[in-house]
Image (cartoon, rainbow, N blue to C red; front, top):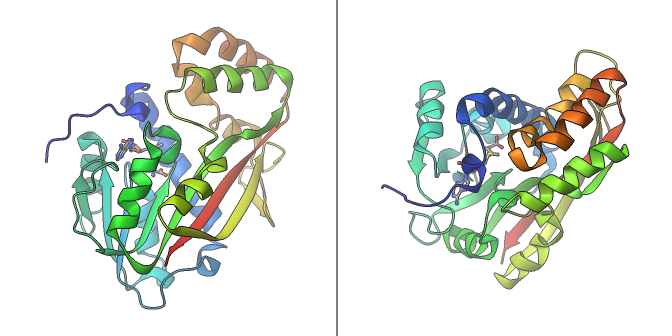
Length: 265
Ligand SMILES: C[S@@+](CC[C@H](N)C(=O)[O-])C[C@H]1O[C@@H](n2cnc3c(N)ncnc32)[C@H](O)[C@@H]1O
């Protein structure tokens, strides 16, 4: 299916520049979810799993190898043909489908578990996507949504300025996690679990350290949470100033990565 639609995410970036960062972020997201994945509510009988906005498919490919998910059949959907091409190169055991979150190309009640990470912040019509998720979920099915929430950002003033300026030019809503429970309820999806992991840049080793719900990243790695903002010409000047100061003395910052799990009654 050929989908002609704006991609808020890809329209803002050069894919070649963004892909390595995105793949790294997806691996990190998986590591972060790992300790909690077994605890997140999911159907008792494994069945069909859909990942919307799957991108290069890194998260789904890692999940497929996870023993807790071994009996699921996986489908990854994305608007971008280019990203699905990359996903398929890495893993051709997953059903990759081109399509949009606003009109999922699947019959009603075809999935037991729907997942989307770093998707909702890029959507112009999140309520429409939520309605589609409800439509394709089987009764008793769950939806796991994971996203960053800019309203939880705390840090040095120069960094806060970049985040705020970027939020103003970003076409989607980088604080959408604050609104999702209400949107979900409109679709008869009730919030059954939420998890908030605070990611900061206080790590002093080469690798990320997860202590409870606090993830400490080494400063350079943590910068990748902000580095994509530098691709926007509107915030370039502020971004370059912040980057320079960050390189001179690591400026502290933290932001929450939030997970919300909803159940279809
Ligand atoms: C930041 S990436 C996240 C990729 C992956 N979920 C992850 O966590 O690494 C956002 C993805 O959503 C896709 N996307 C954006 N708008 C979409 C839409 N309306 N329907 C389906 N996918 C969309 C983009 O093409 C991109 O692959």
